[in-house]
Image (cartoon, rainbow, N blue to C red):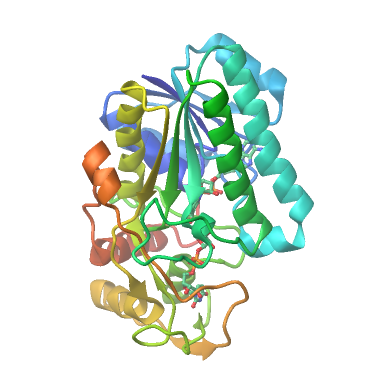
Length: 336
Ligand code: NAD
Ligand code: WQD
């Protein structure tokens, strides 16, 4: 298939190009580079042996999006484009609602106009809020999101469900990612956050490489085995492969489908610190800090539905996630 990746220069998008190429698909990328660098696409070219067509444009720009659909025969779209920093979304709600919602609206309109009705959406475990069921199945009711970022994901899910109901020609897959970490084994592409990282693994790798003094562990009084927050970390290459499998659902005209993409294992913050130290033989100094607003104690999934219906399951464990995250950081101490 010929797949358009919006936000394809970013962390998950760049890894997904590699997996799509491996599976024989063609890729076109559109990205405004607001949170990425074109260098990631040059690195992808080194891995797959060719440069993928890239259009630098904002997905909210309907003229540019129409031009892409006029030029390339697009069979399906994977919509990675979006702003994703939880804390920033609390400070800049309008920017987050405007970017994430409008980009999706413009894209869906342009797709409809070109009769391309196959869509994969990057959703998030955040839509479960403080989950009612652990491990989380797709039947778990959605919960209250505490920040505008999470609300954009939850609201766009509703928009997409309504769209597919109104026009059953659409095939829409909502992929609820758990916590993607790690990097491609080559060390050429990986997570490259701007400024101070918000997420655990980039903070750990930047501490290990000496860019940060110590990791702050946000709370050790949660109702978890060691008191620190428990999450379902998933290797970004496994997550990327999940998108290739989701295309099979589209191929067999799934209508609307929802899948959790996680490993089904929960690791605490201190588990990850220890696993990182063991896998890489480096120390990660840390100290306990107060809880971070909006955090929950435990979040991990039951990934059985994706296995049963897509034949997808995570291959990599926490050791490989830690090894590959460190490999990318070591090879790129200043990022791309
Ligand atoms: P990322 O920031 O690395 O990638 C997103 C890309 O979208 C960036 O390259 C950015 O430049 C681009 N972008 C943003 N707004 C755009 C616009 N209006 N027009 C064109 N390009 C635009 O983030 P990521 O980690 O690769 O995440 C990809 C998607 O997955 C996002 O939608 C994110 O919300 C979602 N997601 C991420 C995680 C995670 O932990 N990384 C978890 C769940 C869901
Ligand atoms: C993981 C654990 C922290 C940083 C977020 C978004 C979610 C999704 C993935 C996009 C928690 C602890 C973290 C640090 C710490 N993104 N931590 N010190 O919060 O599970 O999910 O990213 O959709 O929507 O909310 O991920 O990596 O920020 O935190 O102790 O410096 O690590 O408290 O327990 P989170 P995270």
